Length: 362
Ligand code: PGA
Image (cartoon, rainbow, N blue to C red; front, side, top):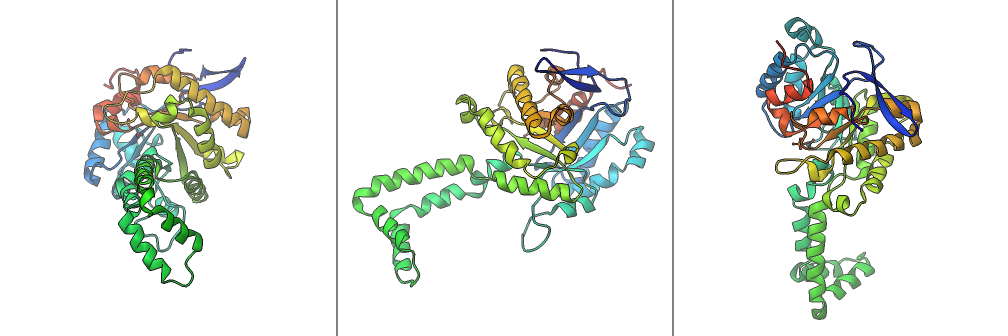
């Protein structure tokens, strides 16, 4: 399974297995690894620039891999100015391999969507690529925004009794809804009501977030506005333990990529991020699992777009990528880079990840 960690390569499918074939240094048609730092909700704009500057210092000799930085929305403009290619070329001798990433976008182009940012707004300030469907947004919004507790509160007897009185005064109240509420608040059903509240609270806590359909619309909006995409997918611990990973990823990717034409797939990067492997205290997925899942995703892409496209789409791994595990990950035939959270906030660590195995710059 292990190969050398090539910095530029082609990918071939031989006897049903994907392999990396080393390319000449600087070969423009070779596949280039992509190392992306997702800063999440960290760093004010000037701290972001300071971090990027330190990383460029440590990686000024790296020209054969792509690096991306995803500051929060507030940091995008400042970083866009700083990573302007001519400036980076003059100052560090790099430039064309540095990309500005946004952490999210909205699918509508304008209007009454307080707090949202459209893809053409991102394009206008020089964002190259946007992360879509990150698990922080697919799965955790219920927890952050209290969907679960507010639903649970609505399933209390007092709330329902009050609602029933209110609805009964309306002419157009739905009789089915009235009957259901009446049934639920009967004394003999109080245990059912409490159980339902508990069940929904934990379900929403775990699951409420962006739907596959919303994610698909975001992918479409980004590509339509000339912003490339990192489409994230990944399973939670429960699905992992129940061996439902493949079914789930297939659903996420089939829906997320619906409407993306074959010739547009060159603008899409996929990131596999198992939720159980993300964040402080978690362990990265074992190499065998990463290899297996990346192969699965690539074979799915082959089904959707054919072998040529599947061979070239970059598939990143994310979830506790650190300097001490990146080399082994990059040796896997299916891995084309990483989406890095925590370790991307530390210049030395992220520089080591970008260098994956090369000694320090002099
Ligand atoms: P982590 O985050 O590297 O801190 O585990 C990865 C991610 O959420 O993209």
